[in-house]
Amino acid sequence: MKPKFLLLLSLAMMLTPSFLYWLGPLRRPAMTDGDVLKMMPCPVCAGSGLVQNQNCQRCRGKKQLQHVIPGPHRPTCIEGHVYAPDGSTVVPEASVTFSSEAGSWSRKTDEQGRFGADLVPGRYPVEIDSPRGKLKTFIVVAPQVTPSPVDIDWSFPLRRDAFTLKK
Image (cartoon, rainbow, N blue to C red):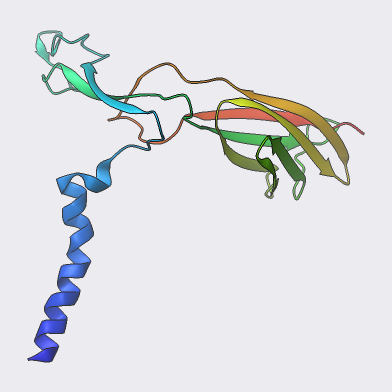
C-alpha cells in the first residue's frame, strides 16, 4: 500500500507545476511594487478586434490585452559591454562596481566583456577597473511610463550600453 501511495504522490508533485502554469499563477508577468495590471485596447487593431476584415492575431478578436502599467520602482535590465581603450577588443574579467545610497555592489565581465544588472530608476556612479584601463562614469535609468502588453514579454525592459576604458 505504501509504494502505491508514494508513486501517486510523486506523480501529483510532478504534474502540479504544469497545472499551476495553465491555471494562471505561474504565468504572471514580472511585477514590482507599484506596477498595475490593466486591460487596455490592443495596440495592433486599436481596440477594434479586426485587421483587414479578419480577427486580429494579437488579441484574437477580443479587442483588449492585459498591460503592465509601470510603477515608480520598475527596474531596467542593463546589459553592458566593456571595450579596451582601442575600442575594438572586449575586456573579460573587468570589475564593474555600482554605487547607490543603499551601498555598492560589483560584477565581473564575462569572456565577451558583458555584464548585467537590474537597476531601478536613478543615477548610479559606475567604476570599471581592469589591467587594460579604468573608467568612472554614471548610468542614468529613467522611470518607465509606457504600458507594455503582457502577451509579448513578461520580463523587465532591456537596455544595452557600451563602455570604452581609458588608459
